Length: 199
Image 1 (cartoon, rainbow, N blue to C red):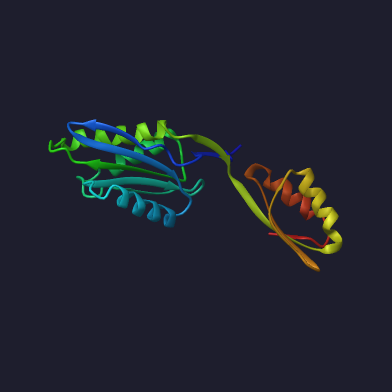
Image 2: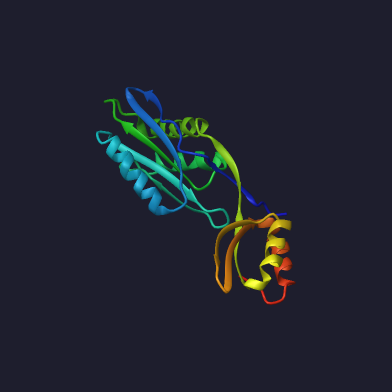
């Protein structure tokens, strides 16, 4: 049975901080669902930490198709973004952005030191985050005539579906959601009803 749940953050994390040879590393994690959100959050974090030397981050979006980016923001290649991304993977979370902001403290850490510092920053942040499990949902648009309203509502009730939105006119349209593993049952239930289309 393929998995129809994923782990993500319930809400933005508390900001964490640790020091390594006078450099300060601030870690933050956010639940995100689009790259636009990622950009907006990065902008606001950069404003808040405008005197920081580096604002490194990694994010991952998606459940079936995974899309991720890791950014070193001026640190040596793969010394910041990828260690942060490694923590996203090891916590098994998705739809998440982790940012580690560094204030340089005058002592160079070297690539090994940076990798370990950014990894620690990301790990502390994810440990401080509220990680929850969500279902992967599938959405359908159901179109039907007003006279079939009761039949449709019966299926929605029996199958425990969520109504996301509805328009009720002469022709009715509803968007309903269900967790992925129930999808075939839903298609079957509506498929058996005459005069009702499901997409």
